[in-house]
Length: 227
Image 1 (cartoon, rainbow, N blue to C red):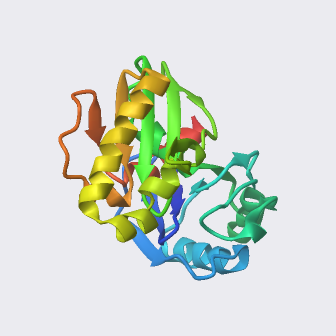
Image 2: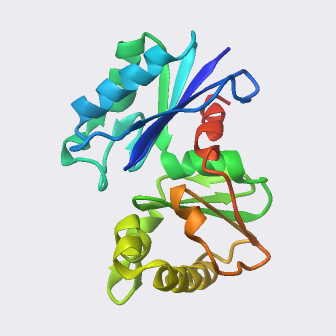
């Protein structure tokens, strides 16, 4: 049973073929996210990524927004036409395979957490994502990035890629430290896992219970949608 894991991001759409145990079968494929990132444009990219892979039996998709039963309800960093778009249904029709869709940070967390205590996941990329787990059970669609953080702005407005480019790495890292302290008080987590494309920008020393994890976990976690 082979699973095609797909991660739709604000800057890139990635795909990786997994075996039945969730281990990679080959290298990750990546195509830049089209601008504007309308459903039609992104679906064309998904079709190309699927055609680039060997035969697969099912598909897992991580999407940067709120997902309910395969349908998109928010897509802040893509395009408003995604709202109420049946991503699972449309993709399934395209590839003639069953498709399951979840929030991208949720999938990152599924690949990262140990299943012990309260575990929080934060993803740093075009936007800011988050996932909360208690004893390995997920609280879905947390949408951490849109919580108010400081100076009347959200975590995403303070720490997203646009903010990083605007304020520079030093200020961004200072903000990250404040965000970690804030999240620790808010969630009282046992462990925080930080992933996403911008983890390479982290220069501050992290607390013992905070670790950086590989961005590929956003794909590897896709196998858990079928467990």
